[in-house]
Length: 338
Image (cartoon, rainbow, N blue to C red; front, side, top):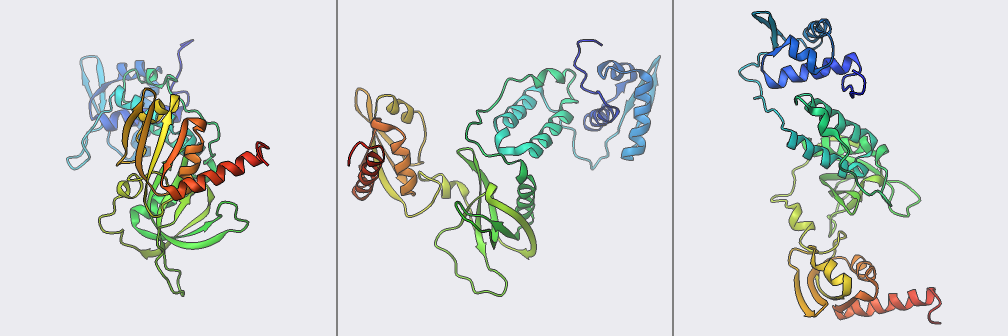
């Protein structure tokens, strides 16, 4: 059919699509309807049915009513219940895939696409769902294509609760260091994928627990090896309480910060959540005071400076002093002062 986008160009795609449709709906489908919806001849559908029996080892039931022939795969009593996906659910999954494409890398993005294609085959008009309505801005992002195996192994280790041996290159590091970790959570922060983990004992060496758990960027992990050593996750482990209770991803001792914002920055900051305990007070017609918990001096200074003259750190006093030193050094670098 000219002009129609053929979703089933290859015989293999037709085979997979037909199997998924029969397997996950558990309903009868007429030969005529299958031929029409898949845009192929009835003879092709019959060949596909025979190949499904051979390739997947399932029993495809045939029945006839009048002049119409029907096919179905009867689900076993202990099989998972059919749960047909809706077009809205599929569109939401597509949106999640497209918004995170830059974090997935090519192999994982293709895996997500294949999963969507299989789900789409359950819809009578699934081709409409894949219109390109969503995308992500990718300036300054990291290419995770070469890290798909690393991510798969980390997920496997978390599922099995086994210790991993990592080869890791720190920021600015010239050499790769190897150490053992207990992987706890993969998460994204400002278009970067991180691994929250606990250090594990290196065989044959003494071990002392660090004050803070290591925070590892996934794109700097060179290799992951799963060991045969299991671990027990921390009791009452709560990622949200650890990372979302205060400003900053690099965790140190918590402190309270007050920052004054004016102009456009006041509106921008007031629209967002920066810390779970934040308080915003209006201090003028176009100014606010943000009070919140922070745990990273470096990140807070960089963040305040990013707003230019529309932001001013009020407290803590010791960090204000450090901020002034940073601004002075910046002014010297640009030749504003000598």
